[in-house]
Amino acid sequence: MATKVLIVDDSALMRALLTEIISGAPDLVVVGSAPDPIAAREMIKALNPDVLTLDVEMPKMDGLEFLSRLMKLRPMPVIMISALTAHGSEVTLQALELGAVDFVAKPRAESVALLQNYAEEIRDKIRAAHGAHLPRRPSAVAATQRTESPLAGVSSRVLNEKLIAIGASTGGTEAIKEVIMRLPAEVPGIVMVQHMPETFTPSFAKRLDTLGAVRVIEARGGERIQPGHAYLAPGHSHMTVKKSGSGWVTELAQTEPVNRHRPAVDVLFNSVAKEVGKNAIGVILTGMGKDGAQGMLAMRQAGAWNIGQDQESCVVYGMPREAALVGAVDEVASLNNVAARMLAKLR
Image (cartoon, rainbow, N blue to C red; front, side):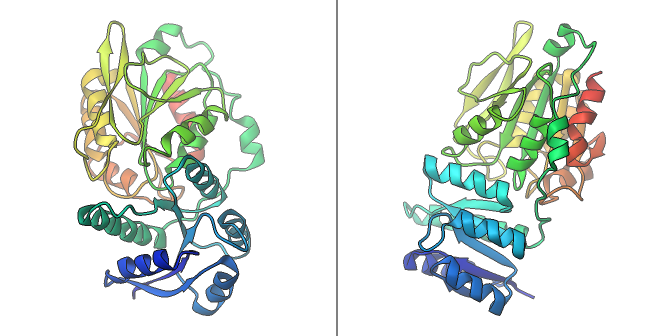
């Protein structure tokens, strides 16, 4: 049976474009399109869609307010349609916190090829959203406990010689946040890839930086990786690590996408396998597709210890499943236990 999609967007042009793109797939059907949340509310009751696409900024009621009400009264998979602006990225991150499964940027009709890529992306995300576990918000009790597990007794030498590499995609903004918030300041340097556009990664890094003990920055390339710091790959470049003296530095490259992504998790993980080897810890979190699986396997073959998020706590159990299937994962854990297992391994 085809996945039923309801489009909510105040732009008639955007509603028509999304309808054409989504209807172009035989397994997807647009059951309706609404110009505002008030109309959408009635159409949800009447049409019972499987997935909602929701514009961030609309008249009568903004997308965030509507999403907040929807997730309380009738939780369902929602994909946000966001402008490629700093403000759009901030609002989209808030939407993901409220329970949206994923987001796509509004298309730029610069070429037929770009529009085709956009069509494939949104169709794939709708399919993934239909089968997604709706994200759960962390409890207030968990939040108060996140910074109470320092690496007592672990030497500064260990903190400097170890490196943590994290990869995520769909559902990953909240998953990475959950892991980072549970880590103490006394932790090895962290390098991270989250599939996002380049206008979104600065906002995401800033948001993570305010939430816990670990300092988070968007990598610019050439940074010496320090304990207690996390470096997020920018949305425009692949990120790798390179051995430099007794430690490592970040490197960026705008080479071709890998697994349809730039930055790609496989690119980061392969470099960690080569440059860090047995001193690395690999983490693969919720995400659509198989990016990261082969790179994580290379890490394990080089002596790294790897952990994958379990199916139950994933929004989309794609990337961790693929990593487990190829034998790249040493341990599987629920999201709220990933940080604790990492710390236990370091101890």
